[in-house]
Image (cartoon, rainbow, N blue to C red):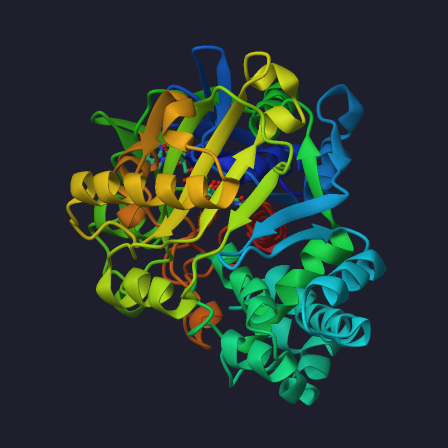
Length: 496
Ligand SMILES: Cc1cc2nc3c(=O)[nH]c(=O)nc-3n(C[C@H](O)[C@H](O)[C@H](O)COP(=O)(O)OP(=O)(O)OC[C@H]3O[C@@H](n4cnc5c(N)ncnc54)[C@H](O)[C@@H]3O)c2cc1C
């Protein structure tokens, strides 16, 4: 906190990963911070469950950019090793294609290029050139688009902004990711591989702009990791850190309204009780934040009506066998990627041959499944919840993906499932208040989407801020953590 400033009394609505990260930063700045959470547990989408000898991470499974977690321990002045440990993955993901091609994506860039040139019609040079272009895009835009508020003029007066504007043509904003990848490669399997990165923010490669080709750089340069104890330990360790430095958590406390007076946030209402605050930060999805908590204010309809990102349908399966050809992350591609995404974003339905992702944490943590068994988090991308008949979608999709996996793994999977639980978009929505169960707030299916995410503050209401996956800079764990950084910097620099 700046010299001469008094600590503020801050309420955070929601103990999702962004709410916890924001709380750690604001408490470390010297403020009094209380987090009010509707559920009886922290973490929101980043949670877990155990049953019948299996442990499953329920939501996120891919962990990248651990530096943003490291930073939280640095600002809180606590040694990370006492709370959180993680290791780098040498095999990033195993890929399986319907034509029988298999490909192991390796973390080391030159090994990756060598392996790719053996598997696909491509030279090592072309792969390395792609990664180089990916890196250029990231370096030109990351500090501008991800680490700062896009809605403050000072952001555009920086050296970084001028550099990005001068190099605008190399950002591939005016083409789609799929067109960009088709220009870079001839082999359809490789194009599908690089198109997949659109799903990292819940978008379609056939609509999202080519600038998303910076995402492979994140995976390749910064690497992918596995936290000791599984993804849920991100939640448990940050929750413990926040509690240790004095953040107060109140569970089973659903905020019903954000109270404002003369265009200033003054507190929240819970079950008819007013709790006052100098500053309110909402980690709730931006749509319910306006539609339920700020009913007395005019909502920014253009922002709220942006199409949602994809959601997920997950089968948590206890499998009575081990598959040596699987690693922690595994992708079984659909045959027709275009049709798959048309189903998700145009027809708002699920194609009969969806791409299947299987995450098997028992590969890293044998105790996550009984001996000789595996815990399969089997997920497909699906549309956000618009009132579809999910029971019938689940029934037909379940049999389609069992057939697909049985075909590609040459084993009748249906006979190996001894435990099953299911998560669908409706449940994601009801458990986390995420509008339509979207995983990443609005989709990034057009070139203006970064600018149509809600800012981290509201110019018409003082002392009200927003963090989390539905506002700037976006969804996914690293970006949620960055939203907390932006909010804490905005509060730190606010003149009051
Ligand atoms: C199945 C799935 C797979 C995913 N895979 C990945 C992945 O591999 N890698 C990755 O980086 N990201 C992934 N994501 C996305 C990632 O989980 C999210 O971006 C991130 O967890 C969002 O965190 P958040 O803090 O913004 O919101 P949330 O986790 O949604 O938390 C919001 C919290 O606010 C609480 N809340 C809301 N309204 C109120 C209220 N009125 N009063 C009190 N409390 C309230 C909710 O109960 C909830 O706890 C995935 C998500 C899902 C669901």
